[in-house]
Amino acid sequence: MRKIVGFSFLIFLLATCTTEKNPKGVLPEDKMVEVLIDIQLTEGIAGAMPISYDSSQVLYRLLEREVFLKHEVEDSVFTNSMIYYLQYPAKIDAIYARVVDSLSLRQATETALEQTGN
Image (cartoon, rainbow, N blue to C red; front, side, top):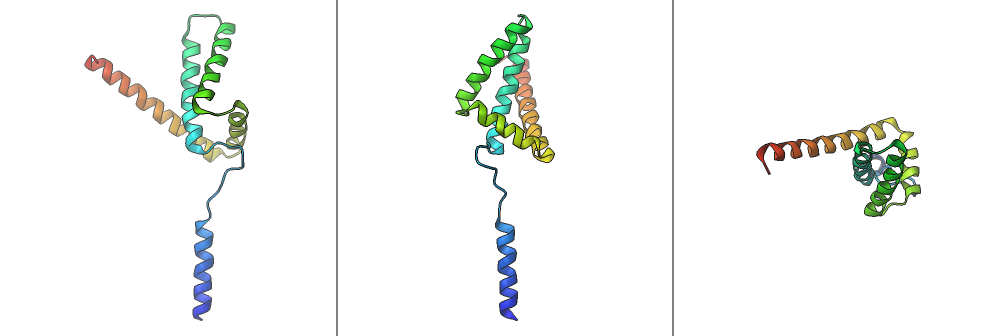
């Protein structure tokens, strides 16, 4: 009886210790959040410039390339990661929730600094 209980416990322990790994070539969620924050900021910068739509698209592509260099991520890896995460609505929702929270916090911090005169 002890062997059965011990074996059952071992199976349970092994089953709970397994973690879900992303496929090779997919960014981890934390890295994906970091890159998406900078991508969103880049889109905002390019969209806010008083230039034509075509020029803003060229500017965005240049700024996007800088984001990928900063994070040491190839654009193909980012694209594959987006395709992967979009297959899992709960994962992509959680990632974008973190992105929105980070951008909101950044905006609140900048607003507070402006109001205090710093």
